[in-house]
Structure formats: C-alpha cells, structure tokens
Length: 323
Ligand SMILES: [Fe+2]
Image (cartoon, rainbow, N blue to C red):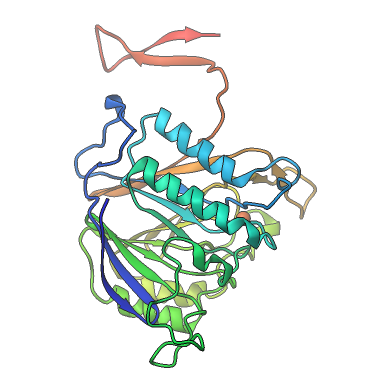
C-alpha cells in the first residue's frame, strides 16, 4: 500500500492512499469478495488499551483489537480501510501507546490497507504522537511551535483519500472540536471530493438515548453540523457510547460504532449504565447509492441455525442445521 503525502500544513495532512479496490492481503474468501463500486470500512472503536493489568480485570484492549481483526479475516471481510474512532488507550495508561503503535502497524501489514485512528477523551495528545498519522509536522521548531507561530500540540485534523472517498479525521479528545479545528473543517469541505467525505471523530454529534450518556455527545455539535450540512459528507463514524447507534443529523447519516473493550447497556438502575464484557465492531459499506453499517460481535457461539441457498432455488434459503 502506498501513501503519497502531497500536502502538509500547520494543522493538517492530506494523504492519498491508492486503495480504490479491494487490495487487502489475507482476506481471500471469494464468497464475500468486494462488490463493484463498494468500499468496505472495518470500523473499530474504544480499544482502551492498558499497561499491565487488564481493564476491569478482564479487558485486554490490544488483544481484543487483534481478535476482531482475526474474526473479520476469518469471515472473509475485505476492507479497503480500517478506522479506529478513539479511546485508543484507557485514561492514565499512556505507557500503552508503544504497544498500541506496534499493534496498529501489525494490523496495517496484515491487511495491506491503511489503518486510520483518531483520539478520544481517554487519549493523550502528546503521548499519542508516536502513533502512525499523529506525528508532529516536520517543520516544528525547537520550542514546539510551527513557523507560522501555531501550536501543533493542539488538534491536528487531517484528510486521507482512500480511493474515491475522503476520510476527514478530527480530534474531539477534549469533548469538543474547538474553533480552530472547525475552521479547518470548513476550509477542507469547501471543495468536494470524489464520491464524498466520511468524517471520523470520537464523540458523536448527538447524545445517547441512555440517560447517563444523554449529554455525552460532542460539545460543539451544533457548530459542527452547521459546517457539515450541505457538503459532500456522506457519513459520520464515531464511538464513545460503547453501544451502537444509528442517526441522521441534518441529512447526514451518523453511525456510532460499538466498542472493542466493553458494551454499555441501560438495564441497570435508572440513571446508571452497566458495562458488559462484550467486544464488538462495525462493518461499514460505502456505495454511490448509500451507506450501511452492521454491528458484529466478536464471539464464536454455536449457531442456533444456519441458512444456505437451496440448490433448486437459490433465492429460497433452507435450514441446513439446527439445534
Ligand atoms: Fe470509550
């Protein structure tokens, strides 16, 4: 996979990735080969990697990331890009970034497609600079500033072209995007690209239906939506809630992907949330006609039944096994 970085400014990098077709290695299930004009995104979120002890005594985020990757490869998924929408580490576990960096590089090598990450509220901007795509610009001066006097340690949004799609990667780690980043977004989206743009940011631009998370969405969502409305943005991929959510905001589809680390549900006491030991990811398809997202649970239970096409009538599935 080649990446041609053709523009680098104080606060953004635009990268072209020649991945317009399914070129990933090792995902060779012909039965699920990429459909024409369809781009598949393997959307992972909320890794919550830790140093030493696993989170809540059970969650090894990096191991779960590999498990999701193995599951997707075994299932014959053929992504053109992998997106991880923040909370890459658990808060105060900055020492997990080096291992996470290695894991991301392994993921990229295993699939042969770009792995794009954004930061979440648990992440640390400075410590995360060692991750692919998060390095300081080459022209940073010794005092940490850029020649134009800006501070790169603020958010560094970037746009990455994958085939005909533009992935716009935003940093909502403080809980909001902020005026500088919104201004960059406004300028970036002023020119449409190819089949359209996909925004990736940790915080969804709306609250969760779970009362505890009702106000946990992006702090400056209204300002963000004012900019996005009417542009070529076709989809917003987020995380943060640890449960899947589909929404439409100002005509743009929002897909909140489930978490790799744990799954939050609302069956606790009113006003509380329970986290369950379930690891999930989302499979996103982009086509010229529309977008879709499917939640996938990384478990291997015995199926209750299996349907396959009938040899006599391929359109009539038959039950070939039940229990
Ligand atoms: Fe999270």
